[in-house]
Length: 499
Image (cartoon, rainbow, N blue to C red):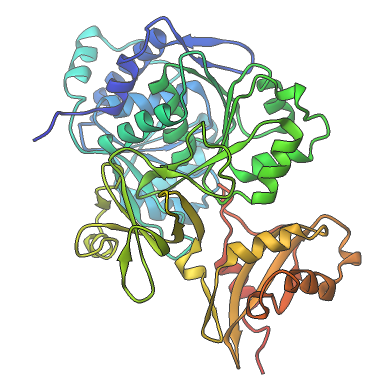
């Protein structure tokens, strides 16, 4: 058995106790020592409520320093944390609580009446988040510390459900620690860095990847309640790093007050959770002087590859494998290779332990020789750098020829009238599938000229790749982290070519 690990113990105790760790928009700050004291008190508080290592603890909380420290306290105490998306309906919440079987569900005071019947039906104890855990005795603190280092599960993260019923991915302490330390190194983060944090904390990007990486680096985190352009611009006068999703960068690009001088302190802009359009990246760099770099991962595989700080020239690529991470592709013929185009597979210390209470899905997620199948189509070049071409299920096969939606989407975004695009396949009586697109416009819909846009794409791409129809939408459907919901688009337009 290897060394016992607890990600919170390891990343916090490697810091200078007097270093500033959390900063709120009003300037209030918390040192590492103060944060650790509060974490230990929260750990003792949850232990006093009957939580033992291995128990699940669910959270439905507004973003705050105390919410994060409560979650870290649960991890310190050996619990498996289970964040719940703030957008979930009662039906979704009830289903996930029944599946996760948590010992506790923490919520804010304003959510108690809504969640009480859901928790009761699922057999879960509901608790309102404590403001502090100051009543916990020193003896209880010591007990919490001793029992807080089980090797194994740290988080239960449910997949977004864009392909069906969400599955609970069991993430280990080792998974989290590997990603945090590897990214801090790849991005050359230091104790002098300050992260602007506009992300939600119900998702791995906001709760785990971004915060853990900054803690491991020795730097600090300026927490914003959510994404607001004005608030983020104010924060960027004090921050050196921004981690966001493509939508954040798009909104910043649309803001006239964003200039090179307004983000002068920003040295590193990182995008994740959804594909970053190449055109958006280039326009942002031209306007701000800051290149956006990407990384790629998944719920089940944390962070697989990342673009290092000193390789900002790789626009459109998501990077090279982190230390100890292996990658390969499997093409349509079943051939496996370290280079080329195919379904991306990976193995290493970043890969999850399996799906919660779902051994069949766990077996299906891996190859016979133990590689995790990401389900993403990718290209690996001769240097080992990765470019994501889209989900395997989103590949369009038209007349027997493969069409990668990402390529067509980039061409559509080059057309001046198109702000954003989603390319997908729908049934076609002659070709099997036809390429179509849904677009957001940067002009009034009344001026939309479908034939002209199709012709513009056709001038740069083969006929079989060119959309046969283009549909205008007010806003492309996305989940909370900006991922396109193409299944919804396919369903909406499935009858386009029906005879």
